[in-house]
Structures are given as structure tokens and as C-alpha cells.
Amino acid sequence: MNLILDLLFPKRCVGCKKLDTYFCKDCITNILQTDLVCPKCEKLAVGGQTHPVCKRKYGLDGLWSLGIYQGSLREAIKQLKYGKVKELAEILVDVTVEYWAKYQPFILDQITKDEGVGWAIIPVPLHWWRENDRGFNQSSLIGQTLSKKLGLAYFDALKRVRYTKPQVKLKGFGRHQNIRNAFSLSPNILISQSPNILLLDDVWTTGSTLRECCYVLKRNGAKKVWAITLAR
Ligand SMILES: [Zn+2]
Ligand SMILES: [Zn+2]
Image 1 (tube, rainbow, N blue to C red):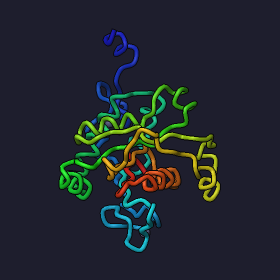
Image 2: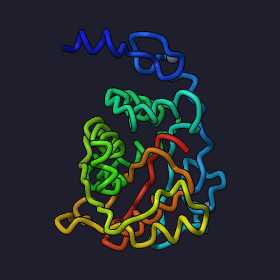
Image 3: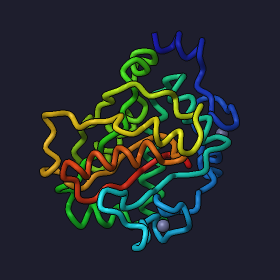
């Protein structure tokens, strides 16, 4: 069966279309890293930590993104999301953890200092009808893969509680209005057991969705919330 599938849909690199790989080494090396910015003001910030003056009680503590949303990284995210090439989740998570270890030990340091205890990964949920439509949530797949790799807890803790328009069709303030009160915490989740959270999404655009999710988590007892995205 796999052989037939391989013949019909041969593996090709998302960047250069080379055969027999989903993401070749050269194209991975060529992912353009983003400057790390504060999730509140989006200006440069060391390690992506929220500036002390930008700290808010229910706000994000930091933002980390793997690369710029363009080229092969953008293609990889699209193939994962719409093409459901699940192998890409594994590859992108490996690359992320490698980058953390090499260039940004900050996040790993925090997690390993706590030996993973008290840390959990929570994905941004899709709306139920979109999830059914595509069959899976790419952010939860990435989250699960990352949780296994780092040995952290994983919860599908957030639910969409009301309809929101697709964010891409809205601008600035409209996005913020659209997303307000759109999420709630699942009733059986006890944040106090894992108060430090890596909140996962595929792309950071304006950040309004991730900020709103963080608000819900912190209102329910989360201590630290970092936004982690593949691209920005
Ligand atoms: Zn390639
Ligand atoms: Zn700031």
C-alpha cells in the first residue's frame, strides 16, 4: 500500500521539490530566522521575552517563532495544514528543538531547570467546523509531537465557545473584537498542576488569537505563558 502511495504521491521537498524527502537539509538550513520580539509591542526583545514595561497581569510572557513566514517554511506549514502531510510535524518539531538548543537556550533552560514539572503544551484550537472540515488540527499535532520530544504534559485545554470569522479577512481592531471571549477552558483541566504553558500555533500574524488564549489561561491560574509558533 505504501509503495503504491509512494509511486502516486512521491515524497518531495517542500522547498526545492527534490525527491525522497519532505524537507531537505539545504532547505531547512535556508529557513530565515525571525528577529525575536516582545509579544506585546512587537519590538525587538532578548530571547523573545516580554519587556518588563510591557508585562501585563494576563498577558504573554514571551514569544518564540522558528522563522519568517515565507519560502519553504511557509510551504511546509501549508502542506501540513491543507495537504495533511503529517510527517512534516515531526520534522518541524525536530528543527525547532534543534534551534532552541543551538541559538535560544532560554526556553529549554527554563523547562529543564524545572525538569519539565509544571510545564504543559496547549494548542490553539480550531473552530469545530473547521476541524471537521480538514480532519485534524495542525497545532495540536505539532503540540503532541513537541510534548513527546520534550517529555512535557499535553492538553487540548482550550475550546472555542462561539463563532469567529476567519481572522485573515479582518484588520487590526476588527480582529481583536472578533476574537474576544471566543475561548474557554475545558472544565476538566486543572491549570494549577501545570501552571507554565507553551501555547502553540502555526503562525503569529497579529497575535490577537494567542493573546486571547493566554488571557483565558491566566484567568484560570496559569503563571507563565509563552507563545510558540512555527512562523511569524
Ligand atoms: Zn529542498
Ligand atoms: Zn514590549
